[in-house]
Image (cartoon, rainbow, N blue to C red; front, side, top):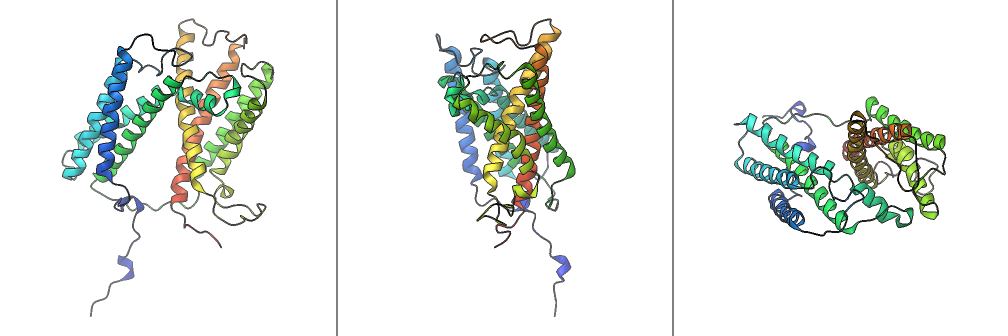
Length: 339
């Protein structure tokens, strides 16, 4: 009589489970079709004359508004097609350098498209709070949204390709607590938000180009929620289980998707937009130009921007790190933590 020792049984790594719920072949078709159609749209935009302004600066994308954007889309399209071929043939690491190259091309193209569409952050603000005074450009917003979707499709496809073609399946245990270094990033984001508030108080609340009124109150409320409550909720227990002082929800699991979606959306857009702005500020200053000349009748000291823009960048990076950790941590938790 043979028996199976319990020691031979091991938990299944969630990353190694077959993704039955996601039709990856159809996802590949969707990604390729979207990228091809968006490339045609970019060609039409490049060839069109007398287009309306698509942002405050005129173009819809940063850096990749012209032929370079079409080239990046082409690289992304080729990378997705090659990744699909690798997954379908199950090469099992026969060409590790080519595997790394294909993944790197896809990831680089996805990152470049996300950075190029960073002005979508202003579109979100203008669409949600039209009374704030931020100009909304419909055509530019649609083109930027298409660019964001393209970057997301390439990024998700590249990640699936990387995990599906690896030769080993490491059985890494999922974390049960938030690492201390992730907690540090959360408090760094809170500190960056605080620095931005202090900078505004130093120059004066009246020195604000945005329109004052009800929309401004909503914006400031969201500002504090996103800069203080959200980062802390992503790393503390009360962001996963409702605390005792919440009536009717005590001990129940906090819905994870509102925090994951808001954290990732704000984090990625803020890191992209203000990362680009920080680099541009450095370039302008090295070339002797003023990074932020007076506009809209408001003249702010340059020191204000050297504090505020990097603070927004650190804030966005903090949200990206804490959201990724939160998503990984909560995906390993049982669906019901308590009755």
